[in-house]
Image 1 (cartoon, helix red, strand yellow):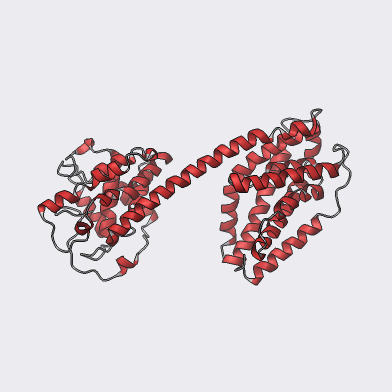
Image 2: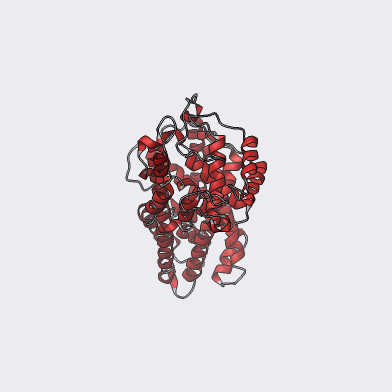
Length: 440
């Protein structure tokens, strides 16, 4: 946070002062909790250990212990549980220390507010009884307050440091954190109920074991998704380097494919698959000689046949990437035409997979609305008119109409690269292969 402006540092200092004030008075005796000082120390140690484990091995942060403290202890004692773990740091740089102080202050305020709401709604008595399902009400309210306080404080510091819109940032943080924190809150409630039961604190600690296992599985899932994204980025970057004049084309085709898929009412999983298909539709160009992709002037018939192998190359390149699913069929068939004159296999009509028909329209639309080396970009309306003219022969009319409706509602705002902004020089598009109709 070395680049944080002075006003944001003042904000952090103000929140820290408020947090220190909330820690007073120090923990008082609680009739239903024997030795509250011991309970605070144990929970604080558990949170510190869990936070370190979460940061190094898992993903996110470790809230079950904090929320268990909010359900078990009075507000100042519950807030104190967060301090050691938040302040624990292996760095000595000023920026690291400032982040730790901010995190500690933020959690103190959030836990204090959650414990206050939980106690005001009679949550501690319900935990002692335990009174089910009444116990869920105060706990749920405490979780909502905990999330809301964290979101508001984060929005405040981001607004001062990065000029982020407060309301939108707050809604975004709150929306992303509510579901996972609710799960942590349920685990914290189970800890609190067992803690107050005849089984005691040892039984309460056992709740953390299945929580850790489920969290580890969730972290593995996110690591796998991150690896998938890295694979996609690497392939797209390789294509962009090899065929630089279409830089950014893959991402835009992915976006247009996603818009069509949503307009067709496809489920979220297929929408994502079609987005990946659009992004990777030209990955087969990695198998085409660079001199052909960058050739000035018309291609010979032999050179066109080599270029037309790129869908099959792409299908082979992605053969071992299991998560792509039907996206591989789109990569293979996105140059087929409804009238059967496309390639590589001359499929026609319904023989062409639906995903390939989606990507074909998205590919052609972006090709027409992007500046290429042989012509300027066409307006969106002109490109849609051309797609409608070729519908039925080259493109699926349903896909063309879906894109038209989506663009009418959402518009089209693609990023313009430096290559597209440059003045084009006359050159025949190697990707068009001399075929009539729209040249993707």
